[in-house]
Length: 346
Image (spheres, rainbow, N blue to C red):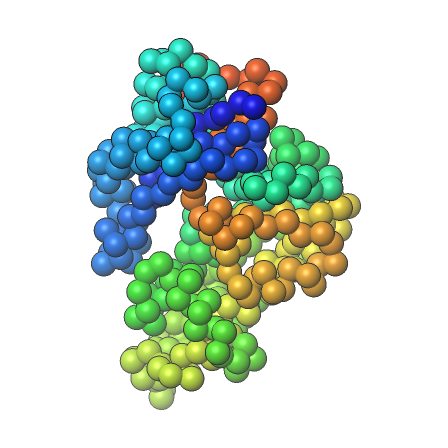
């Protein structure tokens, strides 16, 4: 039963995990940086990379201890080497390459977005029927993927502006709710009326699989602060009490409606037999409650594997280990996903 050591440092979570057979999670340790970035209402890259540098070795030691494993027992070292913040990526990639070299064990570089799709397999080892449609929705990503198998994945739709999780964070900042905004708005929405306010749903062209959330974010801004150049202007103080809950529920309903409609379009186009949803926003209660509307088997990860973690990295790396697809020791940290072209060549 091969053991894979996974390392995660793509953004602001330092993670290490030990996973056996691609799905049995022996340990999954995460050091969060939320408190460091909260006052900035978003991740500060330089602060994130410095925190990774401080946390990486303690997190690795804890992961090994929790798994009751020694470094010598590890069969391969996996790392999420793309996409992400370049300074953050470099910490994890350097640690992984150093360990692989010192232990003389294979190194496996994994795409972080692909790992989010794989996270639905962790702990259960249930294999989604294929072909499938995958949705990765988080603070940095909102994209749709056609999946012929867990390994064969291609991009079919992405956001043209904000990621959905980013929209949550910006609306939360506008309302003075704190950071990260997703869990706060989700909690407020549970006691609000999703039909209280009619915010726009941006579906783009009839068959488009792309996303856009900037207009929704602007609509919330205008609702709270008024439309520039028009009078009377709404109060600049954010709403409170039930009005705040209604706003949160209405905003969330708009986000969820768009995600569900795009998933429906993608499923029809690809003749999908199942839906996979990963990323931080896959923990959202409103989205999870809406997914049955798709009338297909839906696979979402346990809540602990929705946000960035190393278990999904180690799990996906097992598939590469099985086929002998290893990475060289000069593996690069790359800011963009393997499913997209480099930004400069678009």
